[in-house]
Amino acid sequence: MSLKRLTSGLLFALLILSPLAATAAGSFDQRLDVLERRVDRITDLTLQLQAIQEDNRQLRGQIEQLQHEIALLKRKQRDLYLDIDQRIASLQQTPAPAVPAAPPSTATAATPAAVAAPRPSTPAAADPAREEAEYKAAYALLSPQQRRYQEAVKAFRAFLEKYPHSKLAANAQYWMAEASYVLQDNETALREFQKVVSDYPDSPKVAGALLKIGYIQHALGQRAAAKATLEQVVRDYPNTAVADMAKQRLQRLARETR
Image 1 (tube, rainbow, N blue to C red):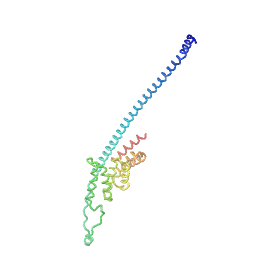
Image 2 (cartoon, helix red, strand yellow):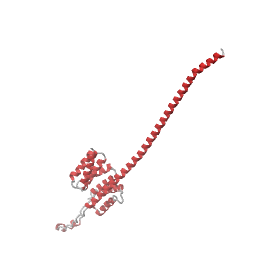
Image 3 (spheres, one colour):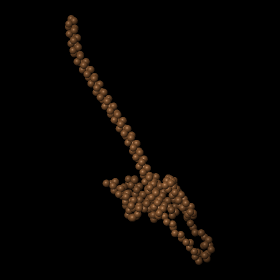
Image 4 (tube, one colour):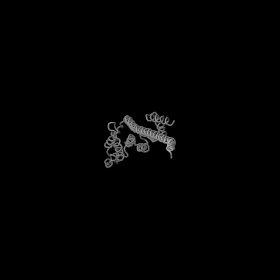
């Protein structure tokens, strides 16, 4: 083979391979560029995801803070209700008129045994002074100075177990329910307020108990029951403070159901 023919063959080979090499190099650069753009996109998405996760953490923190503040507001609101109840109760309390002792009849005086025989009494009435002192001690736990609501629940429950037939039993039942209500133990409070209505129907505490039953039913999402209970308060106790409060809650219920 002559040198001329060899040179011509090499030049021909270079002419053919040069475009292929250039194409291969161009293809590699293109693939690399595509990969780099994909990596950049993934990086951007990762940063966006991290930003969203950080926003979610901040939102959860804000929600937890709001929930805590709402719980405090509910507690303060129920403290206020309790204070109002106590003030109303203190205004309604009137001293019982003294009952003069009846003079002994002639028949009784003529029978010494009848005079000497004591009248039977229930254990709860054996020491009325002690009974009243125990009630006042339990009631004092609800005062703004103490606010020892859990202890008040236990104290009133112990009072009712010890003096089930006391003239203060209805009040003790009501304040025990009220303490549970302030503690936001709605299930217990509802049950105890219902006992005021069922066990002491003639007590002046029934109106307040029905009002709180309506409040609790509303808080538990029992809207129909709450509406019926609050309407009963308005119907059965017109022109009273509890009726006015029941009307306000009924208006709130109406706004929520629109």
